[in-house]
Image 1: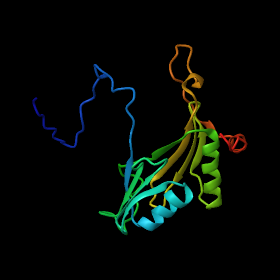
Image 2: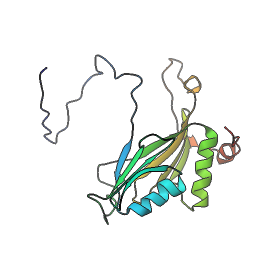
Image 3: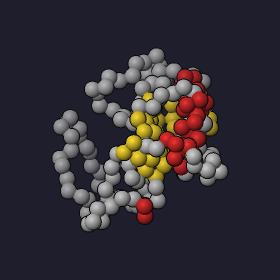
Image 4: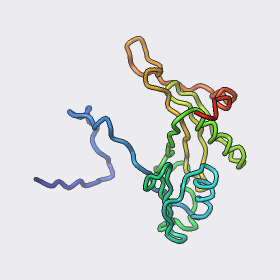
Length: 181
């Protein structure tokens, strides 16, 4: 087995064509780990408003949160960022983390939680493939809360290619979804 060293020259990798073998279809992004300025403030948002469960906490330095008993979907830490400021808008970094909800009713519940907590949305869209709410967490990180439509309902062109779009989200229709779903 040979080893290779990747040297980042700052120029980035050369553009490449599609890989000969695509990544395995079952591959998923398992969790996100965020640098935050104030752990308690972030916990109030991710645990208190969105409803994630605390699975482990390391004092005022780190916490791990989950949906449904997984070890963690969201990690929060102040190791390098305690008391820090959000990045400037013209900087590289995280655009947003996306949290996938299992049903439109679960997304409607998230919308109700945000409204009750007085958290403003940056936007809300119907993308054809999904319904999405966009907002900022207490550290200015972009957060997308969304539900994916079943793949067979995704909009397609006459050639069968994906045809995503951005249209205003119908809040009334979303909030009218059966809360038992």
